Image 1 (cartoon, rainbow, N blue to C red):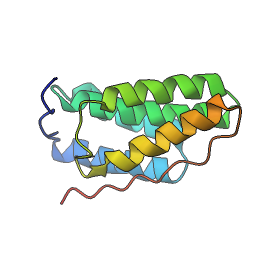
Image 2 (cartoon, rainbow, N blue to C red):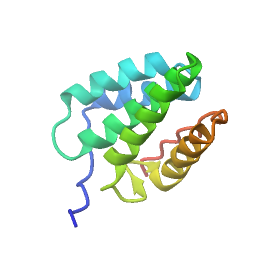
Image 3 (cartoon, rainbow, N blue to C red):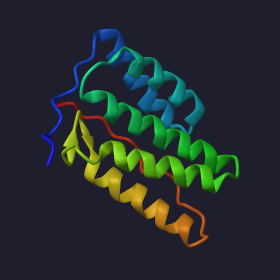
Image 4 (spheres, rainbow, N blue to C red):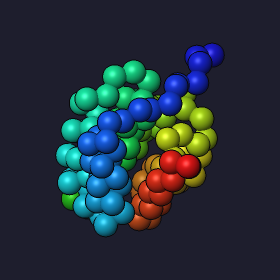
Length: 127
């Protein structure tokens, strides 16, 4: 079994962009969220990269759903879960356990030919 990834460390500028990306996701601005978080992801090295990439993939999945592409959404949801697998249930201020359950539920609904529910809002509490 692999070790739990170390904490994610962002510069002040990266942290500001990260928070902007979270707000964009919560407003349903999935394409914009993807762009914003990708800028943060590009500068991150180490174990936090996969966590960020998972967030980006969930955003892309909801973008696909909004464009009537359930197969693309299903693929992105699955990739996000794989990225998040080594992380603890709470990581970098996120309740990843709840996010994983929401993504798994969305996958199940898509596989059943149903419409995936709207996203579970991202809450970021770094305390």
